[in-house]
Image 1 (cartoon, protein in one colour):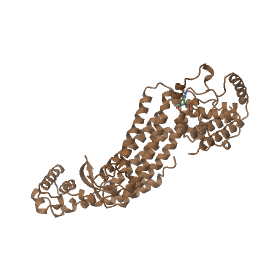
Image 2 (cartoon, protein in one colour; image 1 turned 135 degrees about the vertical axis):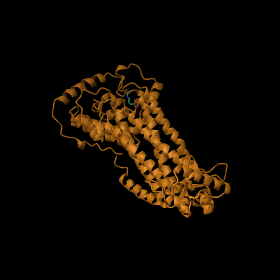
Image 3 (cartoon, helix red, strand yellow; image 1 turned 90 degrees about the horizontal axis):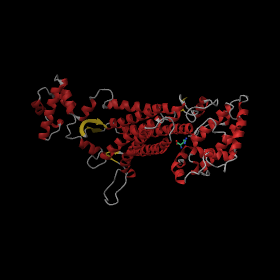
Length: 503
Ligand code: ARG
């Protein structure tokens, strides 16, 4: 994601005396700073007399992972600089120098020339330090009316917004793979399960579309979560706001936030948005894990419902005959990891007094790892879903002797006037008879059936065959070919409307 914050978005500056007062303040400040040992010291060293212990420095340092926020940090700083100039807290010229040099820093980071320094703790101080190295005291003005406390949460909200968009795009492709598979095998009947026991015949396509719905909800959940992520805390400063006449709406607008947070303490304390986002990601992983479990079972010799092509499987180092479904196994395994990050964040936040506490730094690695895991898992499962092939003959065999249409027999008897509970009992007796005689429901003669229940007539065979059972379904959202065909059309329409790139 490229953030477009240009000097050209600058306004006409109001002339007032405020900048002059500020400039004289900065002069005095710089004079004091002149007494320090080295300019490259950490910004807080004014009240410190000892160097940070090396182990403490290592322990507190986050730059190794939070440098991933460099684009967001630079965008936030550019917006902040523009706002400071608009409000005449710094001059327009200073803002444009800051912005140009931040752009250069971004280029250096992207070309690998930027030197990240662990002693400067995090991404924020590294970039600010580099800026100051380039432009001296003008760079030192950037942190006016800002704290790392509002800076970090602004950056992180921008990053989560962006990743939400990326994840949506991945989910879109996965959903599409399910609809394609549904469309490809429109008549294929498979046994549907409850309690992992064969239950009723359903269409393969209907089963595929169940996953389409699950991932649709996941996308809706992300969109909803985004409402609360997409709010700017910038300008909350350390926790109590600032005496400078900042314009928080303006920075929010420049950064593309829909609103600003309403309470500065909450602005720097809130990590609900992180927990909620990890919650969304955990549910996505749970859905992927259920899918994985199903594909692992379906590809076993016991089921043999699908063939996973060699390109998505791996072999065994000892057993030459093996072809293992490692991809879905790993996705199922990684689910624990993402749920773990959610648990970690809930646990980290639960005992924190307001407002900012350093514990919150733990949110970065949790989210980064969860995001990477989710994106890679969706991506690889899209390939698996796209390439898996139903093994039609084996599926057909599995439909035999399962008494899958026993419910249809009971429903048939209800149509003939029996109360449902009675009909259920009779159908159960027919199943029992079939088990004794090794006959499936539609293999029994009319005489045999009539021997159990005289209400049964010739037309029963329109109901208790697999096709009969499927075709008769009428309720909205059920598995009849007509309704499923319509559901496929609706799914394509939904995908067209929700491309997932307009967050
Ligand atoms: N690295 C810190 C974090 O991720 C940035 C904010 C630090 N603020 C502070 N007052 N020490 O939370």
